[in-house]
Image 1 (cartoon, rainbow over the protein chains, first blue to last red):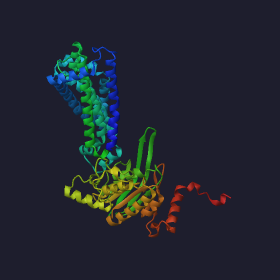
Image 2: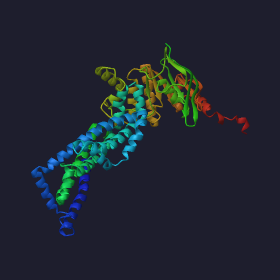
Image 3: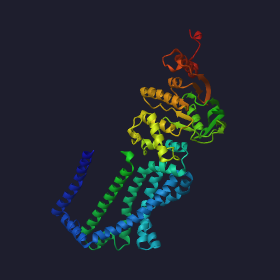
Image 4: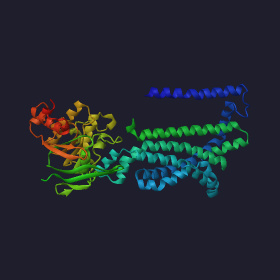
Length: 252
Length: 255
């Protein structure tokens, strides 16, 4: 088992190394001027400078706080409503048309209206993130609840379990893996949304930093910002995977 | 000591293509402590009948009474075992067996679970998850779950249908032993003729479309429990006659 994981990691590292090598070679060969594609060394230096000045950590914390606030709200609302819609036909019929229509609107189209309503402060960013990550969580929760085997629900009925106990003992554990699919998708989209919101209206955060670096012609800073988002996103996704493995020991 | 009384029971399902009569005029009395097998084709409504007795489905007309009370929903006086073990994958075996014991104290629950796991020869598997058990073992755990709150009736819906032939015979022997020691009324639905004869004191033969009781055969003699006996063969022939009567053309006309 362990060996397999190691093999996987080694295999997974090959492509990033190739990309780095290609990057370095194309810069050295003079194919791209440093103002378009900075050398890896410049990016590393920019990274160290930003770490030293606390700029990067500050930006990450600002963006991360926004992501977490919007995302946690979306988890709460998405899992709650998804549970209700996935277990009750009436509630589902009531909401489906409306939510499905809203879902078709791209998150970027929401931003102007959200800024109009909530200003350019924190609320509008949290709202954008909430709106973006709510739907994948909702839809996967509904689908998870619905795919609960009817036979197991029948067993709960046989023992006259209350609605709450049936939810707790049957529906919820059955839907958990699917809910986590939604949580992962929602998290990915949260990062998209926070950067989008910060690119348009913000004075701090990773998205702002990238946009600011564009106006200052600092491609190395842009790349540091982008890589940071990538690394953070992967780590949080991995954390969710570990959490799921931990709370679903029967899946091994 | 009144047992289970099924009276003029009908069940009609409404489907897209009109109403389908699943059960028609079912009348059956089952004594306390009796082992009754219900035999029939797939789709003859025998599982539906069992579900109505369990209280998971309601009858379209007619009634089922147990003792003095009319059955209107599930109750702890009736346990049920399904063809699939239906153990909850996220609960360990002891949690699964104790699933229905929500009102008991922890100590009582633990004792009951331990006793019943011992009864189905699963002691030592308390903390295993269902997917770690073989089909036969999982079905034993399901039987333990069905019996743990000491029901007066155990309903068995083709419980050994998915097991291999050897495990099935083993499980049939064990369920007989459990029946003899626990004195639980057993009602088992099956499509396995041998199983029905071997286990049932009475064998209820059902015909399909709509599901009706064709005949009730007495299979309670000592001989009929021996798969090699003449009596066993005689009952089997009689049952086969019910299912394939259209093929029993009088030989005289065949020549």
